[in-house]
Length: 364
Image (cartoon, rainbow, N blue to C red; front, side, top):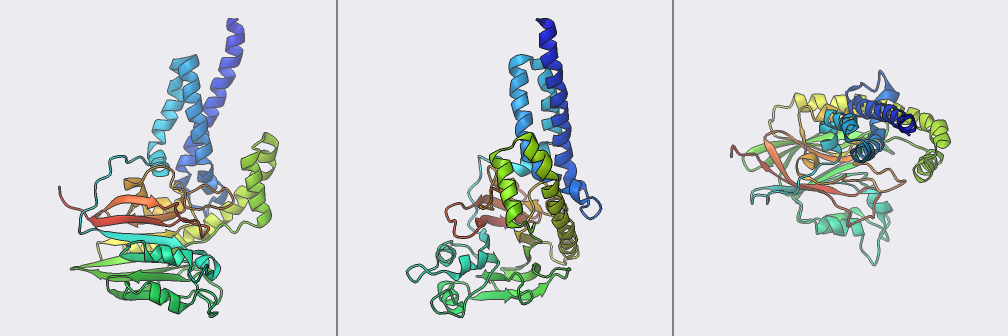
C-alpha cells in the first residue's frame, strides 16, 4: 500500500514542481525584451492557468500531505508581486477626497460603429452620464450620415467638456480623443513606427498644477478569425492534443505583436521619463495584460491605479474569451488612486471602460 502511495505521490510532486517552474517563468516573462525573445515574452498570457493549477495543488497537498504544500506555496510567494498586479484585492478603499478628479478611459470601437438607437448612442449616453472630469477615448470616429452618430451629436452631448482634442492617425488609423473640463494647453504625438496605432501626449492645467496625460492605443495582437476560433476551442475543450498542436502557433503570433508593441512602449516610456512635469497619467488600450513587458516597462515609473485601488481580475476586453485586463490607468507616485473600476455595466464596445478617482498624494 505504501509503494502504491509513493507511485502516485512522487509523480504528482514532480508534476507540481513543473507547474511551479512554469508559474515563475510566466510571471517573470515581463522582464524579457520581446524584440529579442518574442515567444518567451508572450508567456505572461499563460500566467492565470498556472496560477490556478498551483492553487489547486496547494489545496491537494494540504489534504493529502501538508508538508508538500510548501512547494506550491513557495512558488506563489515568489510570484506575489505579479499575483497582486493580476488579481488585486483592496477591500477597504477610502472615500475619494473632494478635490479628486475622475478620469475615464474607454476604447469605444467607433462608438459601436456609430449606431443610434431611438436617436441615441448608448456609449455616448454613458459618457454623458459618467460624471468624469477627463475622458480619454480610443478608436474614436464619427459618421457624416445624420442617421448615425455625428460630430455634432458628440458636441451637444458632451457640452460640459469645453476643452477637447481629436487626433487622426493616418487614413485608416486609430483615432484618439480627449474631452476635459480643464484647459488642454497642448497636444503632441508620440512618434513610433505604426500604421494604425498611436499615442498622444496632452498637457492640462488643473488649478495650479500642470498635468501630463498620455492617451494610448498600442499594437493589437492582429489575430485572424481562424486564430480567435482556435483560441476559443482551446478554452472550451483544453485537451492535451489540441493545446500541443495549436498553442505554439498562437504564441508565435502573440509574440510578434508583443515585439512590435515593445518598441512603441519604449517610445512612450522615454517621453514620460523626459517630462518636465512631475504629475503624469498614462491611460488607454495597451493590448497587453498585467504580466507583460509593456505593463512592466511603464510601471517602473508609474503606479497601476487598478492594482492600488481595484479588486479582482478587472477583465476589460469582452470578446473571444480573451479574459484579460488590457486597458489601464497609470499614475505618477505623487498621485493617489481611489476606486479604480472596470465598468461592466455597458457592453456596447468590445472593451469595458475603466475609470478611477485621482488626487494629489498628501504626507499623511
